[in-house]
Length: 335
Image 1: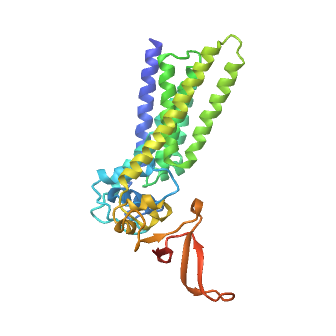
Image 2: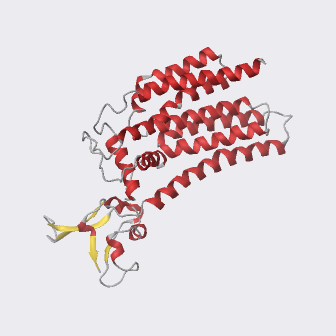
Image 3: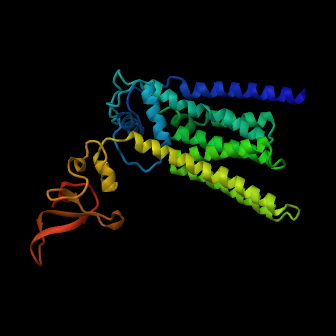
């Protein structure tokens, strides 16, 4: 009876915390009617996905694809360019987009409570931790705009909760709950690593705990070698194969969707560029023939063979030919 009451009370507390957190994230979320802060970057990337326009960015694609999903659900056609400070037009439902992003910020409160309870903290202390997350000003602000940080934090919190749940099962290896928490952690790590590079810190935390746990088992003389090998295999499958598979899956979608040419594709291999719709390279035969226009790139992507009208001030005094690392019309050579 006590366990059933405790589980029920935890659900009630988590629900109340979620509602409180929802108020802080959603109250007057559309008050600012212009493109604010880094919405100019990530909203624009989402619009590129809607239009299928290729682009380059330093971050993995998962969180940006979630921004694109919010734009699709909001009915955006991808034409608004999200210029900083520009007023949102009537056809861009920015309130829905911000609200979609805020859902990830709202999820932080129940995840914080769950994590603390899994670590055997009393309900009062777990609720206090969740309230800290709820009323943290920085987390609240970044959860109210079209940014990547709210999904990143939500996936990080999910990974920590899965790690805490897996830790609770250390005395029951290979039970159904043990497998669920282990593979849940693998999925969460794949998501957080696919959102932003900083998510690798969550991967490092899980990796450090895994190394510690395997070392402790290695020092346990009663553990049979076969069982120890099974522990290694389980963790390799859940914490390496699954996250890497999820990470690669997001990039597969990324390249499958972005099929229209943009100048930023100049950093990609020539064969890739030639296959993009609207690419200048696609207007000629794929194989180099007489009359082809080509770009010659140094091994390792160091730069393109480049020429322009300027002449060397000394020596041959002839037209300059150099290496240049960016897309430019003077990189194109005729055969």
